[in-house]
Length: 147
Image 1 (cartoon, rainbow, N blue to C red):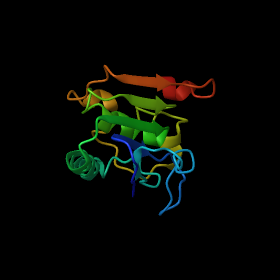
Image 2 (cartoon, rainbow, N blue to C red; image 1 turned 120 degrees about the horizontal axis):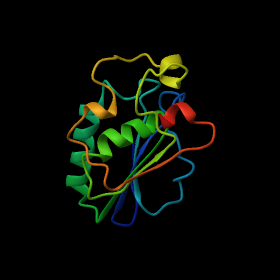
Image 3 (cartoon, helix red, strand yellow; image 1 turned 120 degrees about the vertical axis):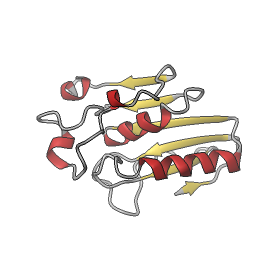
């Protein structure tokens, strides 16, 4: 879902786990921004089966809008997608909140809830990602994610 804005900034937001179909995480948080916001939701799949399609949507949106600035933003499951896609655009900042980047670690949310493929999904497997403009935030209740 694209929420148009007035300025030349595009914020790309990836929803966390347990956001119902047709809804988007953080939509209220970004409801009053003057920037355009591109929201994604992939309902508990860690986005692994739709990354390519999302990259195409992001490329097309950036090409159409020609924004001066792009910001990638995600939390938990959405932080995984933000890392996978934001890492392709190191000229723009990416913010990850409580990211789960290695999937299926015992006790993690992906091991408990995800219905996703398990091959070729961990961040370390993608040599084409550049995290030089990425900031990851962890809370005290995210020791598994910090692995």
